[in-house]
Length: 114
Length: 115
Image (cartoon, rainbow over all chains, first blue to last red; front, side, top):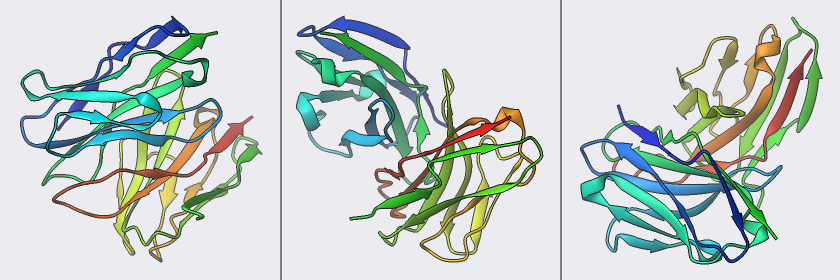
């Protein structure tokens, strides 16, 4: 069974700082990868996804993520964060050809100070 | 665009009471699921369904029942509420694609407090 690790549980940044949130998964086969964002008091929504092709994917609000197959990683990045990026971020993995059930990481809480 | 609709948004129960959290989606998604979200625990899968008449247990199924009589609806029942079931519950759906599992569409959540 696959597992997902998000190493940063809490991140505090000032506006304009750069962001990188780590996500590593354990599964030897082909995967689809997702980052979801949950703004305070709201439901989860998709930030970006990787299915195939260019390993650098761009999402909404200036976020991007890079799939590095050799490292089993799918780290989320943003060059300059804003106060409105304060949220919880979840990495998720779906194994192709296996269960339909995505595996979620435990989430990273990001607080951006103005 | 209704998407995934959950009701109620807030509920307070006493220990031992029963209730049903409703979830409906209008996207004709075969896959539906229930998660609970607790601080520091992330999302934990309670039950899921891959189509009408088919349900299965997730990671934390104890104390919860589900049924799937239609493609659209996937209610979650708490038979005898316990304080440990105080949580935020999310329903999520997705098209069923075994070759390329896709993104989940989440409801807005139901905050349940059990006293």
